[in-house]
Image 1 (cartoon, rainbow, N blue to C red):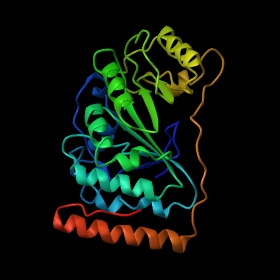
Image 2: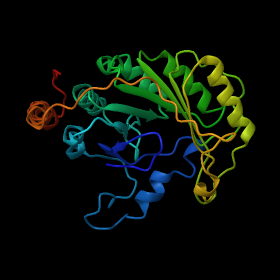
Image 3: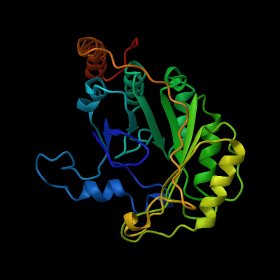
Length: 275
């Protein structure tokens, strides 16, 4: 699905819904959106922001005819407790197979991310087209996630420092390949100070980490814009570009993978899949 999120091209939501776990979740845009449609019969968010697996969305990446940056689960968190390990592995198999897209997987459950990437998802951790990230909003909850991410055997690691709620001070950026920074937006948005952002930008410069400044935020974020000291920052890690196979090949590969997944889901277990 196309999106207005500045640092990606599309969103893909094989999981919907989530549970708040830290201060960064307070004004969750995904929850606000989903709860507007609770009880609307036939709407994708008829159940509001309740956690649901959406297996019918698993193979959407095979339908897109151009390579995309894909934000995985913009309306959820793949690594929350209610999502089975087997289902996470299926998502990983899809990302590894449809390798012409670049996937941005973002979580606040950094410990589970590390555990699964070190185990059954190790094959996906090594993929250059899958970027693994954690949300960082403050020192107490956010900074410890960075250490968990660094301990994971990921090829590409990134931080989404949004909403930035306080000065994070100096911290270790070793092993980090990309940093996104942004302020909170919408009703009740908590303010972000310029000096906090400049500190992060300067640390990224010193560590040679690509820096993406998403927004100042605020109740009316468009008015405040994205400029930092008179310029925009739209830096990314290096990205491998692969041409999308022809439609017949995509369909054949997707159907083969889908057949294995269907058998696994029907048995309540995941068979060994090949890519």
